[in-house]
Length: 212
Image 1 (cartoon, rainbow, N blue to C red):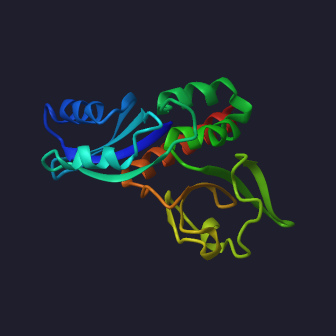
Image 2: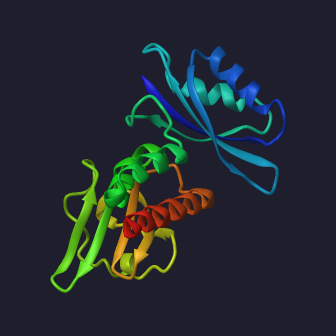
């Protein structure tokens, strides 16, 4: 079974190797590791995609990590977006190859690129809100009041929607009337570095589309 582990660890040489060794000793088969954030306080945030045998519980991963000095697990969950971590450059290659539909292509790739559960692109028109693109797992029914979603002027976290079971939301505006929203069910938290990446990718995809 594939799992995603988000880990906080010292940003010093040897920390990542010690983490990989500990996870391997716990029975994990590491598929990929991606550095998500380097913090100014000397801490790194890494996402680890790994496979676990059916007889090994994910709690064993947490225990193995917490035995290491200054290592903390922020999040662990099943990972259903495929057995790989999609890098930003891969997303850029994909959506630039489909220039006229670059924003739609990026929305399709957001769940894998950002470990999100879904993504949706919305457009505000005189007739109401239109869905430009939505991943298959995106909510079928949107909140009644989307003023806050279209009121953002820069990429940001959104207030939670009460009926969506603690889904964490972030939005990247394309224009005053077009916005891309992503959702994560329960976690992990959307980091500042992820907001910056989302904003850059959405802006680039929108530029490619408008220039084609």
